[in-house]
Amino acid sequence: MNNSPKKPSRWLIVWAGLSILLPMMAIYIYSCNENAIKIAEIEIKQISENQDVDLFIAEIDTTKQNPKKQLPKVTKDSSRHLIDASLINDTAKHRILLIGDSEIGGLRYSINDYCRENGHKIVLAVEWYSATTFNFGRSDTIDKIIAKHKPTYVFMVLGLNELYARDLKARKIAANQLAEKLKGIPYTWIGPANWVEDFGLNKVYESSAETGTYFMSKNLTLPRSKDGRHPDNKGYRIWFDSIASWVQTSAKYKIKMKVPARRARPYLSPVITINAAKYRGY
Image (cartoon, rainbow, N blue to C red; front, side, top):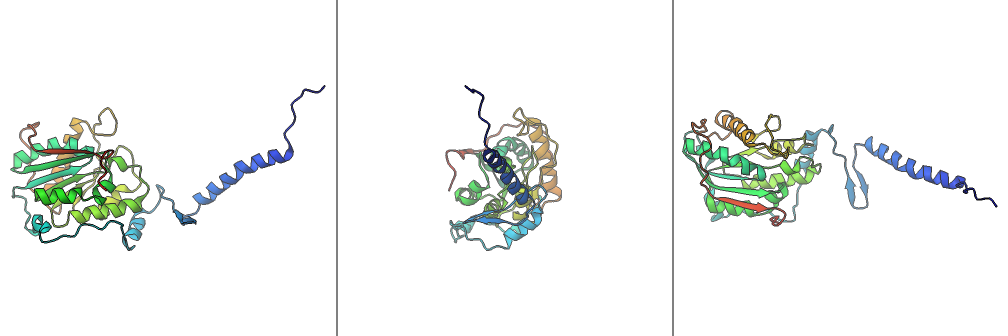
């Protein structure tokens, strides 16, 4: 009696080889193809580190967008918070609104020191934890807050949760929607303090913001907290020192931001905290 194991058939070996080889060939061919591949109603397009993101953004901006949810229209009642941006100067005292993801929760303490030193008032800080451009752009939450609190200047930071994002087209549409909400109000859009290299997110934000309103944070060297993602207390202070200097000297909308003589002043302004996992806004 022969108990030796049976040898696999030749066809089985060939089939096993093809099942490995064919997917590898498909991946290789796709990696060499810069064009979009359409399967049924799904379009697959590469977003790689070497992609010309500027060209990609330009293509998005020239495409007619038809979002399912229309942006709120500015009516006579809702436009009362809008001010003449040309009247902004670096000596005025401002009503400042802070909005952003968890990074604004750390930045607000340094911003508070600068505001109290320079006569500005923080009317509200909105900390939307785990939020992305979609939460800020697609929802009407920011519209309602602006209409209610009527800020004369806005500091906004987001992007920490999107550094790995490659769906730049969708992010660009949402970023444009967010920029639309800020029209008529002087602002500084603060880019995320990158802890890893992004795939074009900063360029998307910069292209949506008004010229001279986007502060590129990604190249700053900041001390980090234990999670490795957020700056630590010293990092937030260094970060806003850089932002404040830029706002006074280079920003489109300059405001008085002299270095505070005192640090770590008590934060007394109202704060709204939102968790995107429980409330996405749209």
